[in-house]
Length: 203
Image (cartoon, rainbow, N blue to C red; front, side, top):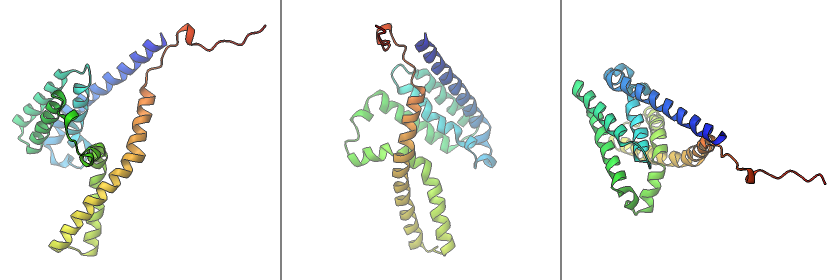
């Protein structure tokens, strides 16, 4: 009974989070992302973030592919109402990742260990690259390094600093957070009578 209740609780949390995610994505596509005043908030980009969640659930064993195609349809309707090139890029990227997952391309490619390592830290890189870029560009502006050569050097420094920061973030934040999340959401196993520790004998 305890195991079943644990699974039911996990499914309820998953369903609730997906419903909230869909609602925010619809609001993002049809309202927030159409107003440039919201581009400094996560709501402006939320549908792009949630696309990754949709891909994860659609490509995992037993996942619903219909969910992915409904999301693609929503993006297409959003572009018909208000053309946005960035939304087209997100749609095409989603289709490419979905196809790669369905046809097994991601298990056969890449063979390069460097590319595989970059793939593992890619989410951390996505999270940290913007603040690193802002920090480097602010420093360059304060120092007055505005020549073409200095600008190219700044981009190179920002690129290398972003990679270094993402490696640290992946090792000390993303990996521990993933382990903690899996431990927290793991359903409690119900012990059978033979698995309970035996009581000490009184004789």
